[in-house]
Image (cartoon, rainbow, N blue to C red; front, top):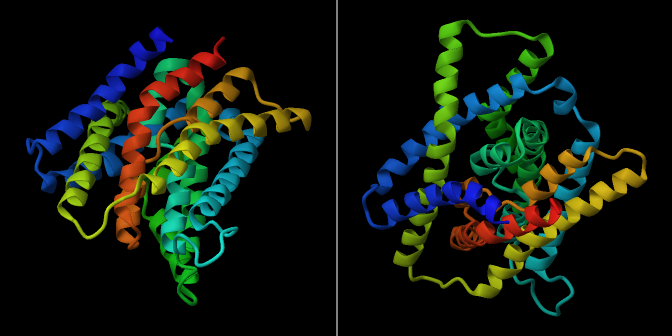
Length: 326
C-alpha cells in the first residue's frame, strides 16, 4: 500500500496546491475559468486523443466493459436518488428532483478525465487507458444526460428541454470528439505529421498537472463562495450518504457487475477488472459542480461532496487498489 501512496501522492498534492493557491488568494477566482477552459478544450482532448489512438481498437470497443459499467451507472443513479428523496418516509420528500438528480450524478460520475486517466495509467500501465475511455464516454453521454433530464422532473415538460440542452452540450464538448477521433486513428493506423504530433504531445503532457491543479482551484472557489453565502448551511446528513455511495458502494457494485458478467460467460481480463473497480473508487468529478451551478441545484452540497470524496479518496483509493492486488 505504501508504494501505491507514493505514486498517488503527487496527484493529490497537485490538487492541494490548487486548493491552497485559490484559498489564500494567490490564484484569483477570475483565473479559474481560463484554467478550466484550457484543460477542457485543449489539454484533456489532446491526452484523450492520444490514448485513444495508441490503444488497440478491441479495448476501445469492449462490449462487456461497456455493458457492465453502464449497468452500474444506472444502479448508482437509482440508489443516490433514493437516498436523497427517501420515498419510504412519510411526508414530503427530503429533496426536489433538481438536487436529487445532481446528487445522483456526483455519486455515479467518477473523476475519470481530470484525475483517473493519468493516475491509473501511472499505476497500472497503458492497458488502463481503454476501459477508462469507455467509462468517460458512458458518463458524458448517458449518465450526465439522464441526470439532467431527471433534474427537470419538478417542472412540467422541463425534462425534454433539459435533455435537448444536454445533447447540445455534449455535441459542443470536445472530449467525446477527441475520443472518437482517437478511435478512428487507432482503427485506420493513421499518424499526424511530425509538427502536429509534437504539438499534441506538449498539450497532452500538460493535461495532468494543470487538470489536477484546476480541481483544487474549483473546489476552493466553491468553498469560498459557500462560506460567503450564509443563506443556508450544508448539513453533513446531506453529504455523507452520497460520499459513502461514491467511495465504497460504487466500486462494490462494479465488482458485483463484473462477477455477474463472468457468470454469463462475458468476463473481462483481471487487469481490466481492476481498472474498472478502482476507477469507480475515484472521487466525484469536479465538473459536476459547474453543471449543478448552471442548472440551479444546491451547488454548495455538490461542492462539499466533491471536496470530501477527493480528500478521503487519497486513503480509500489506495486501500481498495491494495486489496485488489493481493
